[in-house]
Amino acid sequence: MTKTDIKDLSKTELEKALESLGAQRYRVAQIFRWLYKTGVRSFDDMTDLPDDLRRKLKDKFHITRPVMLDSRRSPTDGTTKYLLKLEDGNTIETVFLPEKARGTICLSSQVGCKFSCSFCASAPFGFVRNLKASEILDEVLFVRTKNPDAAITNLVFMGIGEPFDNYDNVMRAIRIFNDKDAFNIGARRITVSTCGVLPGMKKFSDEGLQIELSVSLHCAEDAVRSKIVPVNKRYPLKELIAACREYTARTDRVITFEYILIRGVNSSRQDALKLAALLKGLKCKVNTISYNKIKALDYDEPSARDIRLFIDILKDKGVNVMHRKSRGEDIDAGCGQLRISKL
Image (cartoon, rainbow, N blue to C red; front, side, top):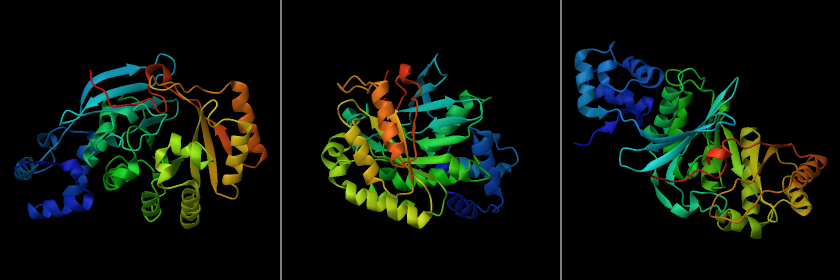
């Protein structure tokens, strides 16, 4: 019998599993604390559980951990990228971004990605499979183990994969990240980034969680955006912006639009004016970021002058905008630079 990773179970599912094993419900909180606060790797380490229950848990479940194949730390800003091997031999990349008062983990949600965004280094490798909830949780557990003195305060689903293409597992992991008996990370400190998968956005608005939503926009013109973000052919800008307006109306939350500035593609004065017109009246903010070099493309970042002009136009039109400095570029850990890789 193939054993299930116990971390794939929600709290409710674990309660039912324990009931079937003849254990009391309060044991769930104990197990959650051992798994997610202490980070044990064996049921034998759960010392306040009865021996009989530990044996039953070992018979039915196991506790997986990824294996680190490589790590690279930026001497510039301290960003660290980890190459992790999963139980089936597939690999993902996870990034830790430490700051003085916070620590952010950039999480992957899939092995590969099927959405082929042109600026993304993982696009040429295609899609392999979804990550299980346990594997997403393992990313945080692993980073925390490697950085025991650092506070893990924020999580962003901006690594490899499209979170809304793995909706159920991502939400299962998020609920455990948010659980007071587990990681106890505030909902507003968790961000899910989508390239514009509308069914996922609509489901997300019904979750009742104050998770931050980020949308990879990158252009205000359909023809160009379809080249940068091919999912735009399925969900064009008119439908995407309508879904964003519906989301803000239903949740009363601000949407963040990510906009990678690419010289000669989407960073002109006209591009800024079109973007301002597209977002008029929408409860949102825009994060611009300069394109990060990947070997597969001839794209380049705009000049500092062009970036200032782009941002000034948006501000003049009343758009809440900031230019975000990419981190970890020197170790290929910046926006769009993560990919499937093996040593």
